Length: 420
Ligand SMILES: [Zn+2]
Picture 1: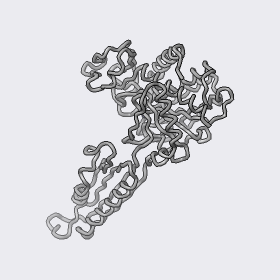
Picture 2: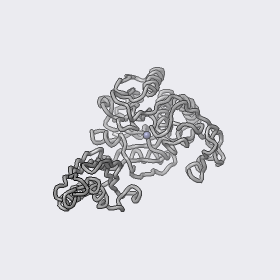
Picture 3: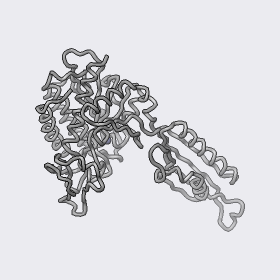
Picture 4: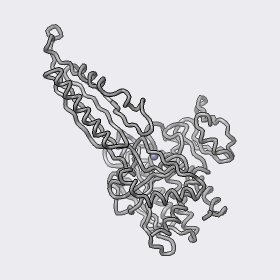
Protein backbone atom coordinates (compact mmCIF):
# COMPACT_ATOMS: atom_id res chain seq x y z
CA UNK A 1 0.00 0.00 0.00
CA UNK A 2 1.29 3.45 -0.89
CA UNK A 3 1.94 6.22 1.59
CA UNK A 4 0.32 9.49 0.50
CA UNK A 5 2.32 12.59 -0.40
CA UNK A 6 0.65 14.42 2.45
CA UNK A 7 1.90 11.89 4.98
CA UNK A 8 5.36 11.89 3.40
CA UNK A 9 5.52 15.67 3.81
CA UNK A 10 4.49 15.40 7.44
CA UNK A 11 7.21 12.77 7.99
CA UNK A 12 9.92 14.93 6.42
CA UNK A 13 8.99 18.04 8.37
CA UNK A 14 8.60 16.27 11.69
CA UNK A 15 11.87 14.33 11.32
CA UNK A 16 13.91 17.43 10.61
CA UNK A 17 12.56 19.50 13.49
CA UNK A 18 12.90 16.72 16.03
CA UNK A 19 16.30 15.51 14.93
CA UNK A 20 17.82 19.01 15.08
CA UNK A 21 16.34 19.43 18.57
CA UNK A 22 17.63 16.11 19.94
CA UNK A 23 21.18 16.26 18.56
CA UNK A 24 21.86 19.54 20.36
CA UNK A 25 21.55 17.82 23.73
CA UNK A 26 24.89 16.34 24.80
CA UNK A 27 24.15 12.69 25.63
CA UNK A 28 27.64 11.24 25.35
CA UNK A 29 28.00 8.05 27.40
CA UNK A 30 30.83 8.06 29.95
CA UNK A 31 32.79 4.76 30.05
CA UNK A 32 34.50 5.77 33.34
CA UNK A 33 31.23 6.33 35.15
CA UNK A 34 30.59 4.25 38.26
CA UNK A 35 27.24 4.08 40.00
CA UNK A 36 23.73 3.90 38.67
CA UNK A 37 22.73 4.41 35.03
CA UNK A 38 22.68 6.57 33.01
CA UNK A 39 26.34 7.60 32.89
CA UNK A 40 25.73 11.26 31.97
CA UNK A 41 23.26 14.01 32.91
CA UNK A 42 22.47 14.86 29.28
CA UNK A 43 20.90 11.46 28.77
CA UNK A 44 18.44 12.25 31.56
CA UNK A 45 17.69 15.63 29.94
CA UNK A 46 16.82 13.97 26.63
CA UNK A 47 14.80 11.20 28.31
CA UNK A 48 12.78 13.85 30.16
CA UNK A 49 12.18 15.77 26.93
CA UNK A 50 11.02 12.60 25.18
CA UNK A 51 8.75 11.81 28.11
CA UNK A 52 7.13 15.27 27.80
CA UNK A 53 6.74 14.97 24.03
CA UNK A 54 5.20 11.50 24.30
CA UNK A 55 2.72 12.88 26.83
CA UNK A 56 1.87 15.79 24.50
CA UNK A 57 1.26 13.25 21.72
CA UNK A 58 -1.17 11.57 24.16
CA UNK A 59 0.49 8.18 24.20
CA UNK A 60 -0.53 5.90 27.05
CA UNK A 61 1.43 4.71 30.07
CA UNK A 62 4.28 7.15 29.44
CA UNK A 63 6.86 6.35 32.10
CA UNK A 64 10.26 7.70 33.05
CA UNK A 65 12.22 4.87 34.67
CA UNK A 66 15.18 6.04 36.84
CA UNK A 67 17.07 2.93 35.66
CA UNK A 68 17.58 4.93 32.45
CA UNK A 69 14.53 4.30 30.30
CA UNK A 70 11.43 5.99 28.93
CA UNK A 71 8.52 3.74 28.00
CA UNK A 72 5.23 4.51 26.26
CA UNK A 73 2.40 2.62 24.61
CA UNK A 74 0.35 3.45 21.53
CA UNK A 75 -2.80 1.33 21.54
CA UNK A 76 -3.58 -0.71 18.41
CA UNK A 77 -5.65 1.03 15.77
CA UNK A 78 -9.35 0.27 15.53
CA UNK A 79 -9.26 -2.31 18.33
CA UNK A 80 -6.97 -4.64 16.36
CA UNK A 81 -5.92 -7.65 18.39
CA UNK A 82 -2.63 -8.67 16.81
CA UNK A 83 0.73 -9.23 18.49
CA UNK A 84 2.16 -5.91 19.80
CA UNK A 85 5.48 -4.62 18.49
CA UNK A 86 8.20 -2.96 20.61
CA UNK A 87 10.52 -0.37 19.07
CA UNK A 88 13.81 0.48 20.77
CA UNK A 89 16.50 3.12 20.21
CA UNK A 90 19.30 4.46 22.42
CA UNK A 91 19.64 8.14 23.35
CA UNK A 92 23.36 8.07 24.21
CA UNK A 93 26.20 8.82 21.79
CA UNK A 94 29.63 7.20 21.54
CA UNK A 95 32.48 8.12 23.91
CA UNK A 96 34.87 8.09 20.88
CA UNK A 97 34.11 11.65 19.76
CA UNK A 98 32.88 14.80 21.55
CA UNK A 99 29.10 15.27 21.71
CA UNK A 100 29.10 18.64 23.46
CA UNK A 101 27.71 21.74 21.76
CA UNK A 102 26.75 19.91 18.55
CA UNK A 103 25.95 22.41 15.77
CA UNK A 104 23.93 20.54 13.13
CA UNK A 105 23.85 21.92 9.59
CA UNK A 106 21.25 21.14 6.94
CA UNK A 107 22.58 21.04 3.38
CA UNK A 108 19.55 21.53 1.12
CA UNK A 109 19.20 19.65 -2.13
CA UNK A 110 22.62 17.96 -2.07
CA UNK A 111 24.29 17.79 -5.49
CA UNK A 112 27.07 15.24 -4.91
CA UNK A 113 29.74 17.77 -3.90
CA UNK A 114 32.41 17.40 -1.18
CA UNK A 115 31.27 18.85 2.16
CA UNK A 116 33.57 21.17 4.13
CA UNK A 117 33.38 21.98 7.82
CA UNK A 118 33.56 25.47 9.41
CA UNK A 119 35.18 24.21 12.65
CA UNK A 120 37.83 22.01 10.98
CA UNK A 121 39.24 23.15 7.63
CA UNK A 122 41.03 19.80 7.12
CA UNK A 123 37.85 17.74 7.32
CA UNK A 124 36.06 16.67 4.12
CA UNK A 125 33.03 14.43 3.66
CA UNK A 126 33.26 13.12 0.12
CA UNK A 127 31.25 10.64 -1.95
CA UNK A 128 34.63 9.06 -2.79
CA UNK A 129 35.06 7.78 0.76
CA UNK A 130 31.33 7.60 1.50
CA UNK A 131 29.63 6.23 -1.61
CA UNK A 132 26.16 6.18 0.03
CA UNK A 133 26.17 9.97 -0.49
CA UNK A 134 25.68 9.23 -4.19
CA UNK A 135 22.19 7.95 -3.47
CA UNK A 136 21.29 11.24 -1.73
CA UNK A 137 21.30 13.59 -4.74
CA UNK A 138 18.52 16.15 -4.27
CA UNK A 139 18.08 15.09 -0.67
CA UNK A 140 18.60 17.32 2.40
CA UNK A 141 21.75 16.18 4.22
CA UNK A 142 22.42 16.79 7.90
CA UNK A 143 26.04 17.05 9.10
CA UNK A 144 27.88 18.46 12.13
CA UNK A 145 30.25 21.44 12.21
CA UNK A 146 33.61 19.63 12.35
CA UNK A 147 34.29 19.75 16.08
CA UNK A 148 31.87 17.06 17.31
CA UNK A 149 30.00 14.03 16.14
CA UNK A 150 26.43 14.59 14.93
CA UNK A 151 24.69 11.96 17.03
CA UNK A 152 22.91 10.04 14.26
CA UNK A 153 23.82 6.92 16.26
CA UNK A 154 21.24 6.67 17.53
CA UNK A 155 19.22 9.89 17.62
CA UNK A 156 18.14 9.03 14.09
CA UNK A 157 16.42 5.95 15.55
CA UNK A 158 14.94 7.94 18.46
CA UNK A 159 13.60 10.59 16.07
CA UNK A 160 12.07 8.04 13.71
CA UNK A 161 10.15 6.31 16.50
CA UNK A 162 8.77 9.68 17.68
CA UNK A 163 7.79 10.69 14.14
CA UNK A 164 6.14 7.32 13.56
CA UNK A 165 4.08 7.78 16.74
CA UNK A 166 2.90 11.21 15.60
CA UNK A 167 2.05 10.00 12.08
CA UNK A 168 0.04 7.04 13.39
CA UNK A 169 -1.84 9.22 15.88
CA UNK A 170 -2.70 11.87 13.29
CA UNK A 171 -3.68 9.28 10.66
CA UNK A 172 -5.99 6.81 12.37
CA UNK A 173 -6.69 5.09 9.06
CA UNK A 174 -3.22 3.53 9.03
CA UNK A 175 -3.62 0.12 10.63
CA UNK A 176 -1.08 -0.77 13.27
CA UNK A 177 -0.70 -3.16 16.19
CA UNK A 178 -0.12 -1.91 19.72
CA UNK A 179 3.25 -0.17 19.58
CA UNK A 180 5.43 -0.18 22.66
CA UNK A 181 8.20 2.38 22.71
CA UNK A 182 11.39 1.99 24.72
CA UNK A 183 14.20 4.56 24.75
CA UNK A 184 17.38 3.23 26.34
CA UNK A 185 20.65 4.73 27.68
CA UNK A 186 24.34 3.77 27.76
CA UNK A 187 24.15 1.36 24.85
CA UNK A 188 27.57 2.54 23.71
CA UNK A 189 29.16 1.31 26.93
CA UNK A 190 27.44 -2.07 26.92
CA UNK A 191 24.70 -1.22 29.45
CA UNK A 192 21.85 -0.69 27.00
CA UNK A 193 19.32 -3.15 28.41
CA UNK A 194 20.60 -3.53 31.97
CA UNK A 195 17.62 -3.69 34.36
CA UNK A 196 15.18 -3.05 31.51
CA UNK A 197 11.57 -3.57 32.60
CA UNK A 198 10.62 -6.68 30.64
CA UNK A 199 6.94 -6.11 31.38
CA UNK A 200 7.11 -3.13 29.02
CA UNK A 201 8.39 -5.25 26.09
CA UNK A 202 6.41 -7.49 23.78
CA UNK A 203 6.97 -10.87 22.14
CA UNK A 204 8.54 -9.12 19.13
CA UNK A 205 10.99 -6.24 19.32
CA UNK A 206 13.02 -4.19 16.87
CA UNK A 207 16.04 -1.97 17.51
CA UNK A 208 16.51 0.87 15.00
CA UNK A 209 20.26 1.09 15.09
CA UNK A 210 21.66 -0.10 11.74
CA UNK A 211 22.86 2.13 8.91
CA UNK A 212 21.72 1.90 5.31
CA UNK A 213 17.94 2.00 4.74
CA UNK A 214 16.92 -1.58 3.94
CA UNK A 215 19.33 -3.18 6.40
CA UNK A 216 17.90 -6.06 8.40
CA UNK A 217 20.37 -7.52 10.87
CA UNK A 218 19.63 -10.73 12.73
CA UNK A 219 23.08 -12.20 13.30
CA UNK A 220 25.91 -10.88 15.45
CA UNK A 221 29.13 -12.25 16.92
CA UNK A 222 29.28 -14.92 19.59
CA UNK A 223 31.56 -13.18 22.08
CA UNK A 224 33.96 -14.20 24.88
CA UNK A 225 36.63 -12.36 26.82
CA UNK A 226 39.73 -14.02 28.27
CA UNK A 227 42.25 -13.13 30.94
CA UNK A 228 45.48 -15.09 31.35
CA UNK A 229 47.78 -14.78 34.33
CA UNK A 230 51.40 -15.96 33.89
CA UNK A 231 53.30 -16.54 37.16
CA UNK A 232 57.07 -16.99 36.77
CA UNK A 233 60.04 -17.51 39.09
CA UNK A 234 62.43 -14.63 39.61
CA UNK A 235 66.10 -15.00 40.47
CA UNK A 236 69.22 -12.85 40.15
CA UNK A 237 70.05 -12.83 36.42
CA UNK A 238 73.60 -13.91 37.23
CA UNK A 239 72.40 -17.15 38.78
CA UNK A 240 69.35 -17.62 36.58
CA UNK A 241 70.63 -20.64 34.63
CA UNK A 242 67.91 -23.33 34.66
CA UNK A 243 66.11 -21.55 37.51
CA UNK A 244 64.53 -18.32 36.31
CA UNK A 245 61.13 -18.43 34.59
CA UNK A 246 60.33 -15.09 33.01
CA UNK A 247 56.58 -14.31 32.94
CA UNK A 248 57.11 -11.75 30.15
CA UNK A 249 58.80 -14.39 27.98
CA UNK A 250 55.97 -16.82 28.71
CA UNK A 251 53.30 -14.27 27.78
CA UNK A 252 55.06 -13.43 24.55
CA UNK A 253 55.54 -17.15 23.73
CA UNK A 254 51.82 -17.56 24.30
CA UNK A 255 51.00 -14.73 21.89
CA UNK A 256 53.24 -16.28 19.25
CA UNK A 257 51.22 -19.49 19.39
CA UNK A 258 47.97 -17.70 18.44
CA UNK A 259 47.37 -17.96 14.69
CA UNK A 260 48.08 -14.61 13.07
CA UNK A 261 45.54 -15.46 10.36
CA UNK A 262 42.83 -15.21 13.02
CA UNK A 263 43.15 -11.60 14.09
CA UNK A 264 40.69 -8.70 13.52
CA UNK A 265 43.22 -7.17 11.12
CA UNK A 266 43.44 -10.35 9.02
CA UNK A 267 39.78 -11.45 8.94
CA UNK A 268 36.50 -10.24 7.47
CA UNK A 269 32.98 -11.39 6.53
CA UNK A 270 32.13 -14.53 8.51
CA UNK A 271 35.61 -15.33 9.85
CA UNK A 272 36.30 -15.15 13.57
CA UNK A 273 39.39 -14.14 15.51
CA UNK A 274 41.50 -13.92 18.67
CA UNK A 275 42.12 -10.32 19.69
CA UNK A 276 44.68 -9.56 22.41
CA UNK A 277 43.80 -6.09 23.73
CA UNK A 278 45.95 -5.52 26.80
CA UNK A 279 49.18 -6.84 28.28
CA UNK A 280 51.15 -5.77 31.33
CA UNK A 281 53.56 -7.38 33.72
CA UNK A 282 57.11 -8.03 34.87
CA UNK A 283 59.50 -10.92 35.37
CA UNK A 284 57.42 -12.37 38.18
CA UNK A 285 53.95 -12.05 36.76
CA UNK A 286 52.21 -10.92 33.57
CA UNK A 287 48.57 -10.57 32.57
CA UNK A 288 47.18 -10.79 29.07
CA UNK A 289 43.59 -9.81 28.30
CA UNK A 290 41.71 -10.22 25.08
CA UNK A 291 38.53 -11.22 23.34
CA UNK A 292 37.51 -13.91 20.89
CA UNK A 293 34.76 -13.54 18.31
CA UNK A 294 33.02 -15.75 15.75
CA UNK A 295 29.55 -16.21 14.30
CA UNK A 296 29.80 -19.91 15.08
CA UNK A 297 29.81 -20.64 18.82
CA UNK A 298 31.43 -24.07 18.21
CA UNK A 299 34.44 -22.38 16.63
CA UNK A 300 34.76 -20.12 19.66
CA UNK A 301 34.63 -23.16 21.94
CA UNK A 302 37.53 -24.58 19.91
CA UNK A 303 39.41 -21.32 20.46
CA UNK A 304 38.87 -21.56 24.21
CA UNK A 305 40.23 -25.11 24.07
CA UNK A 306 43.23 -23.97 22.04
CA UNK A 307 44.05 -21.28 24.63
CA UNK A 308 43.93 -23.92 27.39
CA UNK A 309 46.14 -26.28 25.37
CA UNK A 310 48.76 -23.63 24.66
CA UNK A 311 48.85 -22.83 28.39
CA UNK A 312 49.45 -26.50 29.25
CA UNK A 313 52.20 -26.84 26.64
CA UNK A 314 54.02 -23.81 28.01
CA UNK A 315 53.77 -25.10 31.57
CA UNK A 316 55.33 -28.35 30.34
CA UNK A 317 58.10 -26.51 28.51
CA UNK A 318 59.02 -24.47 31.62
CA UNK A 319 58.36 -26.56 34.75
CA UNK A 320 57.48 -24.15 37.55
CA UNK A 321 55.59 -21.75 35.30
CA UNK A 322 51.95 -21.36 36.32
CA UNK A 323 49.30 -20.15 33.89
CA UNK A 324 45.77 -19.39 35.00
CA UNK A 325 43.12 -18.88 32.30
CA UNK A 326 39.72 -17.25 32.80
CA UNK A 327 36.95 -17.02 30.21
CA UNK A 328 33.76 -14.97 30.28
CA UNK A 329 30.83 -15.13 27.87
CA UNK A 330 29.93 -11.58 26.76
CA UNK A 331 27.04 -12.14 24.38
CA UNK A 332 25.79 -14.73 21.91
CA UNK A 333 24.93 -14.71 18.23
CA UNK A 334 21.26 -13.74 18.16
CA UNK A 335 21.02 -15.67 14.87
CA UNK A 336 20.71 -18.82 17.01
CA UNK A 337 17.30 -17.50 18.09
CA UNK A 338 16.27 -15.30 15.18
CA UNK A 339 16.94 -17.70 12.32
CA UNK A 340 13.93 -19.72 13.40
CA UNK A 341 11.73 -16.59 13.60
CA UNK A 342 11.12 -16.81 9.86
CA UNK A 343 7.64 -15.30 9.97
CA UNK A 344 8.80 -12.17 11.76
CA UNK A 345 11.87 -11.78 9.54
CA UNK A 346 9.68 -12.20 6.44
CA UNK A 347 7.38 -9.50 7.74
CA UNK A 348 10.37 -7.14 8.04
CA UNK A 349 11.54 -8.11 4.54
CA UNK A 350 8.07 -7.39 3.10
CA UNK A 351 8.00 -4.04 4.89
CA UNK A 352 11.38 -3.10 3.39
CA UNK A 353 10.32 -4.17 -0.11
CA UNK A 354 7.06 -2.22 0.23
CA UNK A 355 9.06 1.04 0.24
CA UNK A 356 11.01 0.05 -2.86
CA UNK A 357 14.18 -1.23 -1.17
CA UNK A 358 15.82 -4.64 -1.27
CA UNK A 359 16.63 -6.08 2.18
CA UNK A 360 20.36 -5.93 3.01
CA UNK A 361 21.09 -8.84 5.33
CA UNK A 362 24.69 -8.82 6.52
CA UNK A 363 25.79 -10.24 9.87
CA UNK A 364 27.01 -7.64 12.39
CA UNK A 365 30.72 -7.98 13.19
CA UNK A 366 29.94 -6.77 16.69
CA UNK A 367 27.13 -6.95 19.22
CA UNK A 368 23.75 -5.35 19.74
CA UNK A 369 21.23 -4.88 22.54
CA UNK A 370 18.98 -7.12 20.49
CA UNK A 371 21.35 -10.04 21.12
CA UNK A 372 20.77 -9.91 24.87
CA UNK A 373 17.02 -9.37 24.46
CA UNK A 374 16.69 -12.21 21.93
CA UNK A 375 18.14 -14.72 24.40
CA UNK A 376 15.82 -13.47 27.14
CA UNK A 377 12.75 -14.38 25.11
CA UNK A 378 12.29 -11.17 23.10
CA UNK A 379 13.38 -11.85 19.52
CA UNK A 380 14.86 -8.54 18.39
CA UNK A 381 16.39 -7.96 14.93
CA UNK A 382 18.00 -4.63 14.09
CA UNK A 383 16.65 -2.30 11.39
CA UNK A 384 18.25 0.73 9.77
CA UNK A 385 17.96 4.24 11.18
CA UNK A 386 19.91 5.89 8.33
CA UNK A 387 22.96 6.70 10.48
CA UNK A 388 26.26 6.96 8.59
CA UNK A 389 30.01 7.41 9.33
CA UNK A 390 29.15 6.81 12.96
CA UNK A 391 31.29 7.67 16.00
CA UNK A 392 33.16 10.36 14.05
CA UNK A 393 33.05 14.05 13.18
CA UNK A 394 31.84 13.00 9.74
CA UNK A 395 28.64 11.41 11.06
CA UNK A 396 25.79 12.31 8.73
CA UNK A 397 22.31 11.34 7.69
CA UNK A 398 19.65 12.78 5.42
CA UNK A 399 15.95 13.50 5.63
CA UNK A 400 15.38 11.06 2.76
CA UNK A 401 17.24 8.25 4.53
CA UNK A 402 15.39 8.78 7.78
CA UNK A 403 12.00 9.04 6.09
CA UNK A 404 12.62 5.72 4.26
CA UNK A 405 13.15 4.18 7.69
CA UNK A 406 9.87 5.64 9.02
CA UNK A 407 8.01 4.47 5.90
CA UNK A 408 9.45 0.98 6.40
CA UNK A 409 8.09 0.98 9.96
CA UNK A 410 4.65 2.08 8.73
CA UNK A 411 4.62 -0.81 6.26
CA UNK A 412 5.76 -3.28 8.91
CA UNK A 413 2.94 -2.02 11.17
CA UNK A 414 0.38 -2.49 8.41
CA UNK A 415 1.61 -6.01 7.69
CA UNK A 416 1.75 -6.92 11.37
CA UNK A 417 -1.84 -5.76 11.86
CA UNK A 418 -3.07 -8.17 9.23
CA UNK A 419 -1.06 -11.14 10.57
CA UNK A 420 -2.54 -13.41 13.24
ZN1 LIG B 1 23.96 2.60 18.05
